[in-house]
Image 1 (cartoon, rainbow, N blue to C red):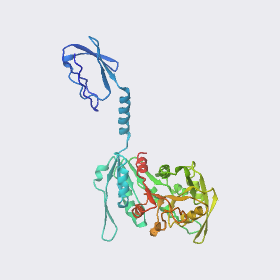
Image 2 (cartoon, rainbow, N blue to C red):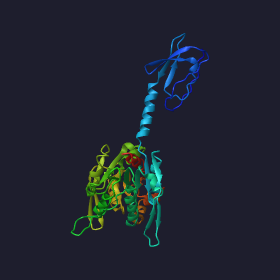
Image 3 (tube, helix red, strand yellow):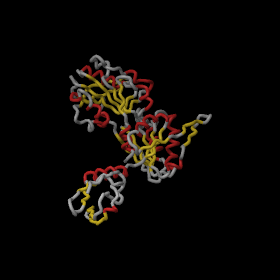
Image 4 (cartoon, rainbow, N blue to C red):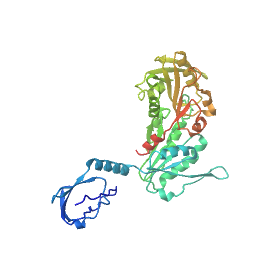
Length: 398
């Protein structure tokens, strides 16, 4: 009797057939079951998953089908992961188009959906969601960018409309929560606009799956998380893991120290960066002047990375850079999650190309939470953009 050829595929199991050249009776042993089959009925090994091997015995002994447990486990795990991945329809505004494409590239479970962003003659938004019926029963997300007050209203109109289209769930991804970054609630009459925006977002209509989930990164004032109401589920993420990954790639990764420009930055980030030596600076404001001193730590001979959640004009960062260089830092780099840089203030930061840390930065890392800034600084040293795409894609699976 000749050894048969076996044809294997990934399709679900179907009745097993083998092909022989002679007529005889054989017995199949499969999953602790035996069955006698006429050889003439045995055709081929088609449509079988890649988890069986055949053990031929001489004479009248049965044919043994042996299940490959390793392949079975791997196949089952793969199929299980595929089944559990949540399919998400991701909408975006014009500013976040590029970031949305990077997010979608992270996972086959994320499908990009567009919106027609138009305006009427009087300047008010004329918006349209194509194929609105097609997202019924789907998990839906919107990637927003509140880069300016004028951009907020048209995006809120879409944000309020999407959950009402009978979607299974709705997630708002707002990488940078913009309001409150410069607010000081010190005098009677000061208005907390961060509270206003939090309340507006807290009243997003409920979808079929329940309250809206809000994903945001490194919110500026920690107390702002308490501004949100009970009808929204804020998910506060951090981009610091992106920085950690980048620091590990540096040739002098064993000579890195982290500097915080003030106690607020230390409170926010020191636990995520605790395996690095740390330097804490103290910031005193004297009118429009910022006086920065080293409160603790020694920068001598080290590659110092200044870490904060955001940068506006960059004045504090520059003063911190100067004092660290004066105390012997060999190199100075900076990281902020949100590079706001109004009025092109990013132009104040030059690259250190000749060992002069007092006048230039080796690297300035920012995330792509502020798309307008990313377009301006892309490919301009010392700036490097660390993308939130992978972090957002993961958050959409929560």
